[in-house]
Length: 195
Image (tube, rainbow, N blue to C red):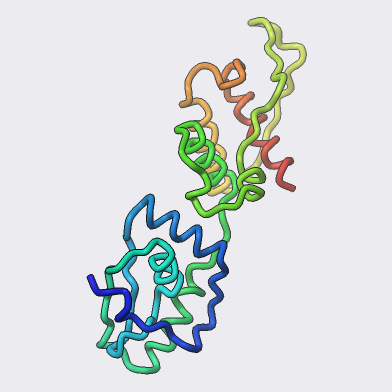
């Protein structure tokens, strides 16, 4: 733990940290505490953590966790600055993300603390399928049997999604039965809503 005023931002830091991002980082630090230290070189210049420093300053924090990477060469320091931000970039699995966000929503957790904007949350959250048909037992006439060929990874995702939908209890929050067909219809609707 070091005093925040001992840490020196890198003058040529190529990664932008807009005010909205700093606010999100500050919210995350306030909620989850420090789980990623600021990394500095032997001269106390930041390698990783410019945004976290700015968030700490916004929160009025006086001491922060720091790793002094005095074992890195000057070239490694420069490369590490770029790598830290670049390698973290990747795509989301939208269906799994929607399930995680929905679970947090049902736990009454502030979804703003996940780092997603309101518009992003609205786009990713699974919207319940309204007016799911409820047919009397034994009535098979309006049903269709469908067969799909899926890659192993795709099949695993479908099975996981169906299992999660079925595990939530016999009925969903709209009063519809949690049956595999209904769960699959919800998965498909979510896909169509995000095209």
